[in-house]
Amino acid sequence: MLQRIVQSAAGAILLLVGAQVSAHDLMTLDDFAAAIGWDFEGTEIRTEKVGDTLYVLFGVGGNIAVSVGDDGVLIVDDQFPQMMSRIKAAIAELGGADIDFAINTHWHFDHADGNLTLGPEGTWIVSHSNARAMNMDDHVINLVSMQYGQKAYPAAALPDITFDDRMQFHFNGERIDLVHFGPAHTTGDTGVFFRGNNAVHLGDVFNGAYPFIDADNGGGHGRHNQQADVLVGVPIAGVRAPSQLDQATSIHDDDRQESRHMDRDLEEDARHIDRE
Image (cartoon, rainbow, N blue to C red; front, side, top):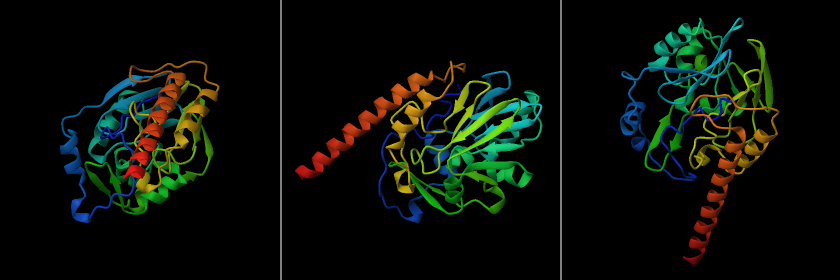
């Protein structure tokens, strides 16, 4: 599976609730990139093969799944406009041409700002309905040590196709399932299951650390366990993926452990507040 192909952009590991920030405290993309060491000019795209028609691209921001075949090109997440020429060049090297569909796993800038380029060019953008709604307004993403101000997207960059619970593509010889489990990392997360390649792109729901729950914008801790349980029930026999990706059962165990740690810490915080 294309299991854990996204690292959390800032390595955030906390449940974020209710911090108030003023507009002048918000970081711009340039500020944010400098703070965490992103290099838009110097970063090259690295490609790994996952299956016969499926690849993963590593660049700046959330990693990109790429399906290339007779039906065209479908990608999952699209990083940033600053990276788009290199993303397109990498896809061309895989035999692809124009990007026909771009699926957003969620609305955060490091996974969806590429919409600003692809939408006006005619790519069909797909997301959960809540993700589209979030992209229609300005929002603050609170990372505790920094607060990023994500601006509303123009109409041409908004998703063209949305779903509420599930939808399917039949593309490049396989069924691709889009599944929403409820609020988790955000209020509009999508898991993308590539059945023919035995792979799944999970956005930032699983990132190898304590889950970052964007609670200020509707994310919810409780659904992480449900998503992990569903993963184990998915009829996927084995996992074939590059080095950053793990077995589905390992994802489940890791997420369960992370959730238990979060439950424990929240209970301890509550006891501490009571003692005060």
